[in-house]
Length: 109
Length: 237
Image 1: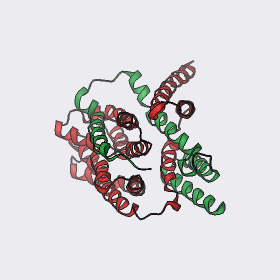
Image 2 (image 1 turned 60 degrees about the vertical axis):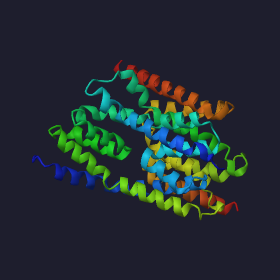
Image 3 (image 1 turned 180 degrees about the vertical axis):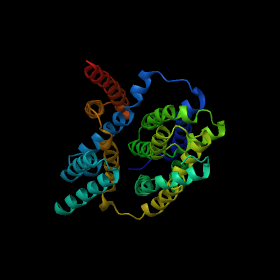
């Protein structure tokens, strides 16, 4: 897995400008005027709408195993999700997911 | 607590942000390592870290670039991950909207999840704060975090090249994203949006260049918003 270097800086600058404009948007331009409720209602769900869809294929069809489902990666994903949901603690979820992954990789050889 | 002293609120913000160092440092290290594994050089890693300064969006961009998605798709998807910041911006506007333009620009550049979360709660609980005090508190919350975000990312980029493939770092990214999403599954609407996102992304996996993910994300946002309306309607009945 390698990236095409000709486009890396284009991506960096586009994301830098785009991210700044998103962050500055209301603070800078709209001022104190209120936002339409329906816009806020959709924006509320952006993290949970984008990240699960991005992760799902990586969990089910990892490139490292040639795209076939892998018990170690599947169980690490489940443990991460469960610990994160129950503890509401990002760091605890990452650590238990990593521990599960390495534990399973070690056990399964 | 009634004295008008920006310095005090600045220090208070810095103190409140200290626990988040435990989240920021490993996350930044991981970005440095994952991006280096994907083939980025140190300058490119630091370009992301300093100019974009948004962990989840950076991870998403790097992942899509390794899949050789077209540049436009990479940019749109990573910006979609950052759209939540528009919500942060909107919710801070009543508190900081009357600050000078350069201060609002600085607040925008430094807008990270942790600074937003701390400041929003503080401003809501202490409505008597002046705009200057609010700005001081906000800057205080990022002071322990942002320099560490830069430096840990650099360390990760330099160390990343030396980590062998047997460490299964390909899976660092899925674990990090799942860990970020899980605590956000607070309501039925959030769960519905997440499930929609997964199902649509898997069904649309045949679509070229990762464009299926954009379709899945838009569908999931609509489902989340509609379920929220439905639940609210049911609650008032």
